[in-house]
Image (cartoon, rainbow, N blue to C red):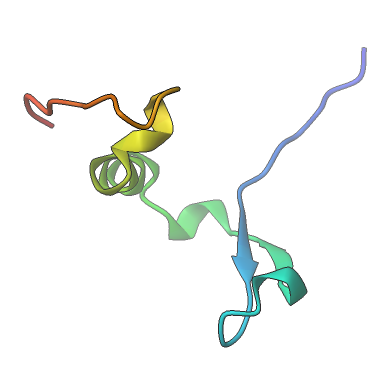
Length: 61
């Protein structure tokens, strides 16, 4: 059986040139996954939705 290991990466780019960016692996000990994931979802709830017109109502964290 082969094990597949996935990592967390960030896109590093300069001055808005995202197409020239490179992926860098993030060290897992430098990230508070749950807190960062909650913050990301709170600021970008649209990633959970298929339709742009839909709305997310946050009850609590």
